Image (cartoon, rainbow, N blue to C red; front, side):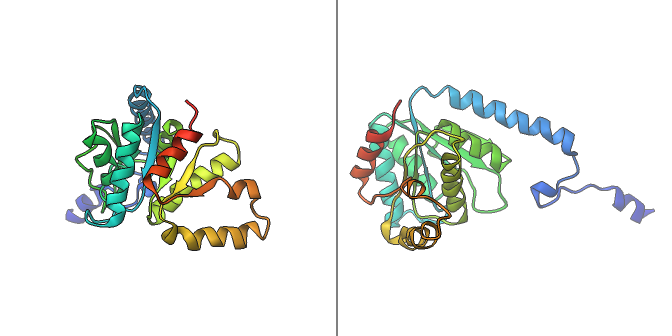
Amino acid sequence: MECKERRKIKREPKYILDNTIIGDSWRMFRIMGEFVEGFDAMSAVDIPAVTIYGSARTPVEHPWYILTEKIARKLAESGYAIITGGGPGIMEAANKGAAEVSGVSIGLNISLPHEQEPNPYANLPLNFKYFFVRKVMFMKYSMAFICMPGGFGSLDELFESLTLIQTQRIKPFPIILVGSDYWKGLVDWIRNTMLASSTISQDDFELIRIIDDPYEVVDYVNEKVVV
């Protein structure tokens, strides 16, 4: 009897895409709810926004953290809302920089088993369960992407934006890699392997701009963003 009762207990699976407890049909309502909440909140922001992303593992004292904070502060002073993934590290630095000058500081947080605790500096926080819903918010409401040094998540967001621009699914916008020493190996590989093999075009390659100076980052965004 005890074994039969134990088999009736339904536990939440660890992996979101394997979750069969609520069923795919009911899951659609949850997904729709996230889209509605996200669209309502983000469409209320009446100034252009710039997304800044990078590693959640960057400590407060790290030069990357300090640089991110400065870039976000300068962008907010120039009239841009700052969008991040809402977590610690680089995301926290960007939200903090915007909040320090009373700018619009948006955090699109995601529920993860580790690393993703919401930072306290987002004055417009949103929470998501699904990565793809969150990605739509980044792409739909950003006028520029600034990619600080980061890991797999940062690369995912970088190449997602490049792919959507390349395939003309979204309008082109500035994509800036900050940290030439960090990104050099990747950019060299894109140039010397992908471009040389004709798997991308020269126009595709030129979608990326590497800038280290925070003032030049802001100047480039101001130059390229058309509101």
